[in-house]
Image 1: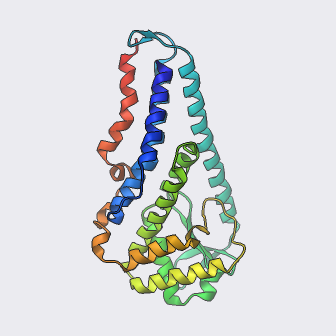
Image 2: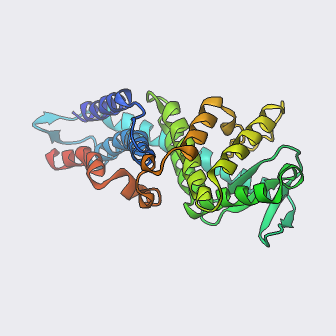
Image 3: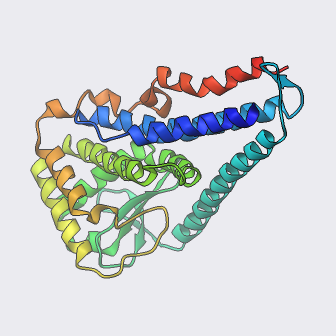
Length: 292
């Protein structure tokens, strides 16, 4: 019975993922739908594995004797999750050490940033709760002061929403759920919507047309380079996709009605996914009361 419970949760997770498609709605609705489809299926499998381990491999469930196979499979699932978390933690520590090698510089705005010596214009937030700004020499040498300010506004959004923290956690789920369908598609969808949210923040402080032109300029600069800095977890080449660039530009230039309420962008993961959706994770935990 325990093995059947884990298998049922896995089948539900696979079916949930297979049904996912990017919805044609507001950007905030797409954001919420992507979070739900990305997070809940693997968490459902983990909840099933934890429920089986809590019940143990002795006793009965619904009148049927349980076997140790369910516990063995559950241990393997949790080991995979721990391995995914360990890999992400090692990558984070390596990135933090790498960041400390870059010198600090004071920007004209008075802010401090770590400076990376490369001619490609790049910017990122690095760290977890209190992320640090990482800029390349290309940002300071090839962009105008106005364009630099737009870059800073965009990165302020990532810092405000603590994207580096939440996407580090999502990265753990991504590693764990690599066996589930559409994991990579959902990951790319979340990365796109994360950048669109930061663009939206910047557009409230600068002209959207200026931001769109800067996006095209940055994309051309990156595509012209055959080698970008290899810093795992930052993904400097994520924005080079023409399809992604087109969607970001369209989002900037389209009407405000397509964005949805601004307050929905800033909600935490629990509120973004929604209380009703979280109840799905409690389904396998109910089985604990059926074990004797």
